[in-house]
Length: 306
Image (tube, rainbow, N blue to C red; front, side):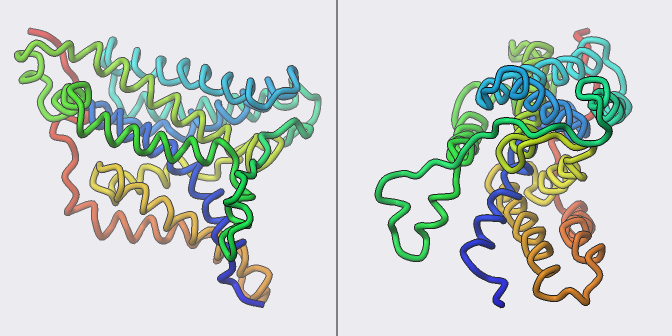
């Protein structure tokens, strides 16, 4: 049985998208000068919210919309703590992770009366684009993608374009390089950072929702399994740029897909070792590139107008 098939590519895409979305959120936040390591907790909040609304309303798209709103709440909370109150960004982000993991796990038995995993809900289906699904070799790939997968591609291009080719992106990056210089140039640093951190919450929550109502059809406690941290590793690996960061996410997706497939092809290899493969790659990436990557100069630094 061969590992490298078109189904491996499909699985890799499905495993990469929930890393790419929080990556985009972290990129926006840190380019504005606010360190956001709370992506994991925001993802869990989005994953649970999507399932709750899909369960109550029976419409997965409204669940995805609700997940985005939960991202506004979690991102807005982090923005309030770090930008408005000028709290420590590492401590505030860590608190978001802890609250996200604990609260979502605690709400499952309260809402559904069972521990650990929710009942099955409506999920966002794959969509077949006429013509593409009939293509030889790659046709099955297009038949397994949903509108969220195509939307993620649009978001990647959009974030890259806005951040690096528009005046808005220039203002965001200026706040991340030197908040004082940006303020002197007339840029509202506080408002820019508030919006950037809030948007980072939306992207992270959508990444969590992708796991719960696109890949799966239920919420499970701690179902993100460290993907928020993998997004941070990809951010460093990509040196706070869009395309190298996305490439790192795709590598992580392939690594996880190969690990899952290897459990079938090579059952003698301990599956715990295979499951650790993406995180080992992340460690290698951090150990190799963290010393060479150049973070935005003002990331992690508080700002207050004199």
